[in-house]
Length: 261
Image (cartoon, rainbow, N blue to C red; front, side, top):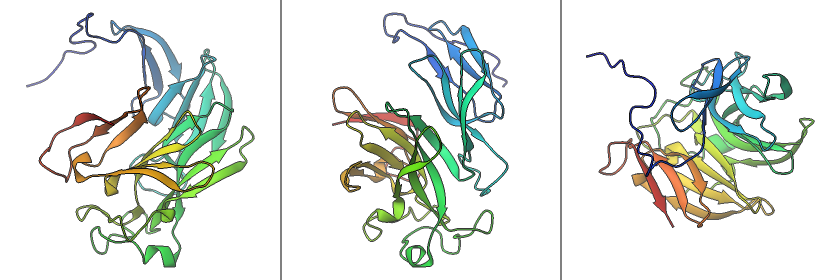
């Protein structure tokens, strides 16, 4: 059976949150701003196409991660470009990092923070536990890689970095059904109001908060029930909202959204 109904399929105005929705389908050449009735009120023509996240800045500009053909050939969330478009679709700022993947955010101070891959040292690679044996070089022959949370200033200078090898690698093990080529598939870097960074590590079923000043992990939530989660963020009430994929974990083999304190 073909499903041919597009656009808004159901709208309960008493329950729907008012406002607009911004989204850019993966590998699609447009970013779209929709009103609550599903009408496209604005579009941006992209140079390459979105990879995962995009955000509307206070000045009305679009901030988005886009792909590149350069760098590692790990397919999931591969980026390479951070771009800012004005309302008319002109590129007013961009940064190229072939190792960028999944997420990027503009900070209140004008800097940008994003996730990137970095080749692991042999010493750190030997410390990785779990995962499928022999899968360390499963994609491009390179690797294994680790994730780095990288902050740059408007000129592209690196001002802060945090590597996933700084996690307790004896404590956290890759899911036995996942590959070992990447420690540990970070897919979200969500800045908090106090400057700290919340990070989601998919193959570890792990959420952490990194203290921006000390570099220490100040909070964690480690639970197989997360099911290879992504899109974690802190709510105004201090609770955490996260999207759980429902993979390889617990009794919930379906997607769901969790809020916990």
